[in-house]
Length: 141
Image (cartoon, rainbow, N blue to C red; front, side, top):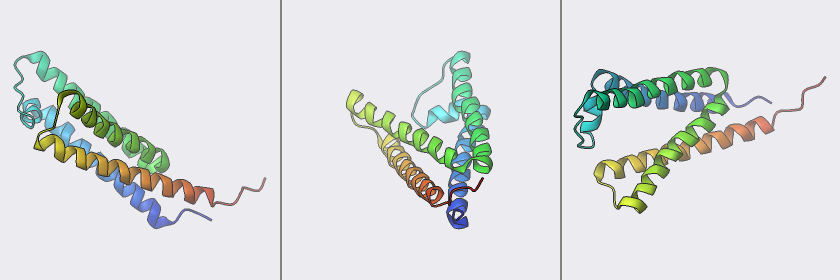
């Protein structure tokens, strides 16, 4: 029995939407790093700061996009596992901030909700895909 096509397409769609979200951040950071920092009211004051934001939010995010697109076509379950970790650790980082520095502002609260939701979706899709794989009959040799 093969995985249901609808489940696989939903998983691929989720991976693609996650890649698009990261691509938009990457493009924004590569073009204008200050625009990323404006979201949290931080002023970049030197070229090293611009370079760091461009590298982390631009370059690293672009690397993640490329990895996600590869996984979307070649290893959907692996892509979902990766997104479970990515979105989950983003959310965990915000929770650590709440306990370490105090309550988040509206930006942080909004993203905690979004990242938590994306992590739950990724975990649910991963679980469904793994269960569908377990239903496959053993290969005959």
